[in-house]
Image (tube, rainbow, N blue to C red; front, top):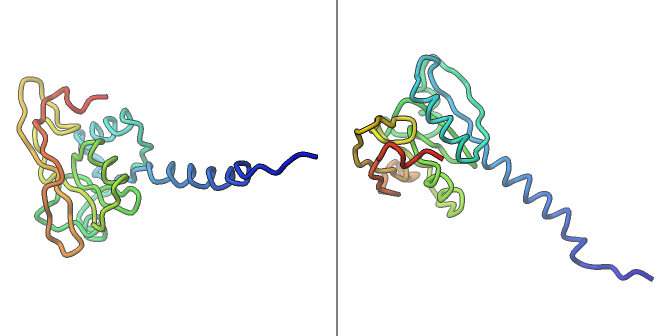
Length: 155
């Protein structure tokens, strides 16, 4: 008579976990239709293995407001993934760390549009920039500092 193996009982749970992980790695982006750097950032995220869902909007302000992104931390596009807001040209490695660590926060932002951030690469030019963690009280702290070299974020 075959013995019941507990490992088989765990298979459905593993499938559920995989499905949740897959949905958490879909980044939903709201951007204006005329922004080329947003499209470049989307391609960098696809290259990094994220599924992307893109929606063109005339104005990203209401989207950023709804996501809880303070005005002083805004950029050219607003995204969400795994219950977090992602504002601007945030590198893929910072998003992965956010999803792994799961801090009690609104999300991440790269304010402005720094040269050398993903989607803002310019050959021969770069600037150091920071990804910040947006706390639920509206304050923020540095999550990561990047040198912004043009090749740094290409996968």
